[in-house]
Length: 124
Image (tube, rainbow, N blue to C red):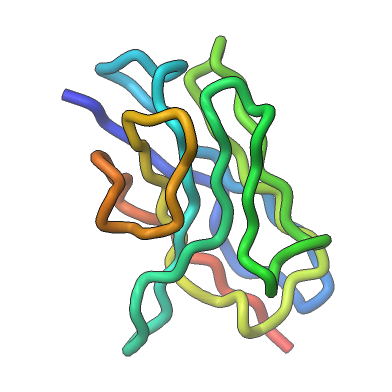
């Protein structure tokens, strides 16, 4: 089984920073494209960022461009999401996901595995 576990969520003031981690086990991590998604209460799951197998391709949702950075360390089976200049509208449960493909999609239905999520709350 492939298991993804997120960590690093918490409460932070607007303008602050937070770094999320997602560690994989039970599979070949380097063969998966990875993505980050978020979901606020009453809203659909939203694409945030994605990264290819080697980390040479990245993609971001417009509202987080210039503030968030996705990266991965295949030796540690871990993908990261560095979040800077956080805003209250960033408040959500953040999920990591894995897709058996080269180019990571933005559609959540195309991902094969999901973590349980980590709560991020940004106060104003």
